[in-house]
Image (cartoon, rainbow, N blue to C red):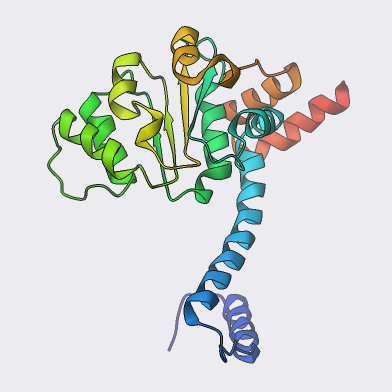
Length: 245
């Protein structure tokens, strides 16, 4: 049978299949199947996280130290309290990017997760519908009215550890999407981004409001080059610039 697949690739596939065939399986013996599956999932998740970490560093420029600060001083994954965390700063400073970077790092450690973008610009029922679906609280296509959605969220997430990002929030919509701490299960984290520092201090408490910082000159240039040019050129141009300096 003729194919258009290069011989070199076919040879590599055959070699890979032979190696897989030589791998020995794992015998359960007396170990419960559920316990084995749990260990298996943990191992795969660990290996995937290593891959995700490398992709993460390439995707987010100049935010790693800021993410670590938020994780250690504001998020505190070990704490079992329900915590609202605010990210504040002027428009364009990178609040959404920072929230996204934090979310990408930790959302797999929660039972359910949702990133609600541009909440201020979207219709409330649109944001709420996304939240309900992300939380696996509804599956049918027709949207619920806002009061039903709010009641469902507040009742059915009380025993679930979740992380929700409400991006570019205003007070009215925030009240309907993530009204109170008692809506969510122990260990939940609600991250809110907005320019309105007063809203964040009221909802999160002053100690849990992070003031977003500008990128330094080097990271700002790296981000500009990456966004302005094709990805293959980024490293070459950046390192040429670094060498000149």
